[in-house]
Length: 467
Image 1 (cartoon, rainbow, N blue to C red):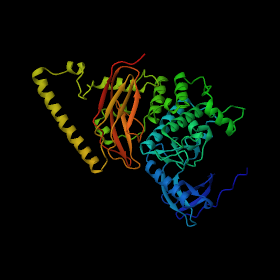
Image 2: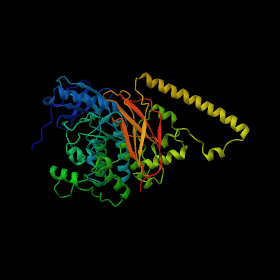
Image 3: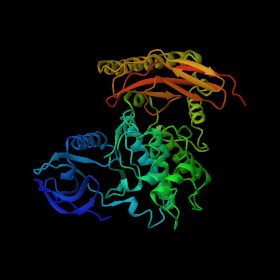
């Protein structure tokens, strides 16, 4: 099979062509110098022979997606989009001189760099998921490196909106980093399949090869697909990789989607736990917080960190311990002061007065902030879930609610014990617990990149867990 020659670079006013950067099935990428402001840029130009109404719409969708997401520090920045004089649409993007694909096969990447890159890229994926977007082509060659060495995720060319990806969609596949259910045409992409691709990508950066690639063996498409569908995830082969990291990667690439991390956020927490275990600087989570979450947060660093001694894969237990340590909560949602706080109280006569004034002031400010946020959200017309119900069957809990009026593109975000799940369309959420305790859930409607007012938190007790 002969490789096609790049197309002729278009004449773009305000830009000077320098050289070809790469070619793909639908587009070429060229290096230009922008005249004002003066800088190097990468310009992605569609091929004239593939431009029709459908492809033009896909390209416009990619431009819109990249514009919405490119403010994220780990997503490639798009500067502008337009149509050249010869009719070919193009994107002007940040120029990155290298990709991780050019390094991970040539040299062994430090484990600290791989873990940090994994957290940053998974943060980009989590941000895209919260915007209702699936990337669908996560792999090392789509991780570029900026001039300052920061990894960024690129190429949302086959991205799809959450809930709209169907098995019949025609998409390009990067087989070594595609989940088995995608290769079997069961789905075109889901949050679970993105977790698989994240795991496969981090594995590749560690091992210097894709997960099911056999050095010196048959690595053709048919052989790779067969191993991805049936074989166990092999060890990375690096002696500096702890068992916890091998386990979390194997979990991310489980054959059954339900056995993987629940989303990119849980995958991030697991990587951070390994950083903590190895006494490495913990990479910050890069996911934007809602206004209401920022208003109630105490320490910004604590929102993105997990404590020492946390075990990988026990996210529900981590959330319960964190919540209990901060402030015990009863089933009806009321808070109770801790014994330590009571022990530090002032003498009764002055302490009650000062405490009462402080509480009153805090309640007043809280009500004002909550009222303003609620008014702002209600003004946006985002519906509110009002009737979360819980049903317990042994260790299994199902929370359900009535549809408050979702529109196409809307989604629910379920928050379990303070941790948000990936967006979903179903008006129900099921989970199983591994220890007795209280589980609290609230449901928020996501619309057009914004979260509405959360439902009243619904808590339920699990008294016994079958052994």
